[in-house]
Image 1: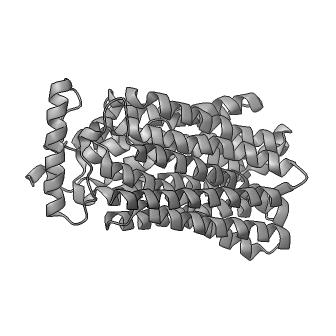
Image 2 (image 1 turned 45 degrees about the vertical axis):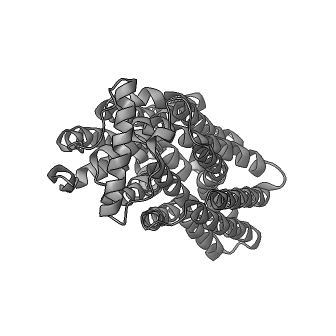
Length: 431
């Protein structure tokens, strides 16, 4: 292993990776934390509020599915700049008192900001971070979404008490702008690993580079037991992905429905059904986000130690089912402690799925196709994110209310568990 690869990557680079993943969702998590005020001030229904999340994640799903190959052809610095500028623009638009339609536009821009982060950050990991640190860094950078949830859920209600929810959005817009400046410096000083092939090569050179990358990966595995199993890069072409990629996208879609149905409506549930004040309602999402950060780091470590991805996904799905049952119990009984337990289980399980999906990609996809492959899996997740809030909003607005909503969320997580079982059986047949 050469001297440049042994050099420890900077902490500022890790901060930028985490920030890139978390910048886009800041707007939506912030509005969710003050959802009761937004609904009252704009005179909209719960279902209409859910449309904000649907618009956001629908744009993210489309962006991930269509812009991934575009991202493969652009530099890390330019993509990072786009991510942070769009995230800041979305927050600034929220501050404009132009009604619900302006929030829909802001939500769409926020979604586009989430079209690139997984792909470009995964590519940076492959090209600039040594193998021994790579999977661990996945857990930290994928926790950016939960750091965003934690930050927005705490900051928005507190700032809203002084400046209103629009003023809170304007102040928070400074965060992605600061991260953008940090990204320029961090990427400039982070060296490319010398054994990573260039992305700008012709077809013949690409085939040779992929073969060299496979050989280098085998050598790295021999040097470090923390390296995950490596699949021949030649099995991934520019137009076709292994079935594993599509299976991960399907799991991400189902889990995404439950994740955002819960994330978007958990503060409102605590305020409307359990009588929590606005700040305490935002704290429920903050608790889930904080636990989600620790969970993603922990699950990433398990993946780095060679844990089976499908088995981990099965465990997470079953815990998520229990969490949905606790949300249902809290609403029926009115017991606040059940809500806190449900939030903790939600953070531990459903919020940890993303890191397992991305770790599985890093085990099998070469850097030349990482942005687009990550985009396909992310598109599945964001499609679920888009469906979850609007579906939950319709259920909450129906006679069944939140109780029906939590039942449906639990059933969706059961489908996740079933898919995980099918993945385990498929893995056994390949052995």
